[in-house]
Image (cartoon, rainbow, N blue to C red):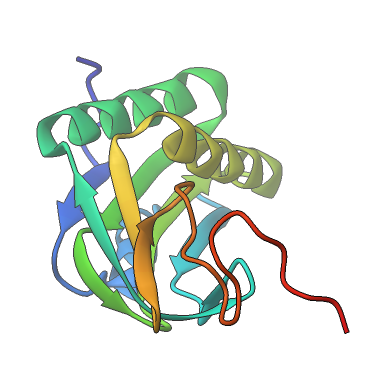
Length: 159
């Protein structure tokens, strides 16, 4: 398991993510930049209105992978501190599902590391999202329920 730096914050939580506090807490006097990514629940997916989302994780492995990402960021970018926090459980429209903050002396490293962190998290961390619609639910990247007026395997009628 990769070690994180003493001031890094890597967490899974079922509580609202304290974004402002995280961005403030990772900032040191040597930092000239803090880049953040705020992944939030939108009101639509695949052309359908989303009611809410639920996130589940293989928690011990997810935390381990998140620590690996932080270690990788420190190894490849000139950064000082990292916060990676992901919500689990039910989330409503507008709520933050994942928040990443990276501090650095210069903005380029902070931006690059922040983008790398979210891209890697989405590909490697065992966290799953279930999307709820008025007519059913689906795990993200799974099979969508049919659109209104459509049966499975058919295209909607064109006008």
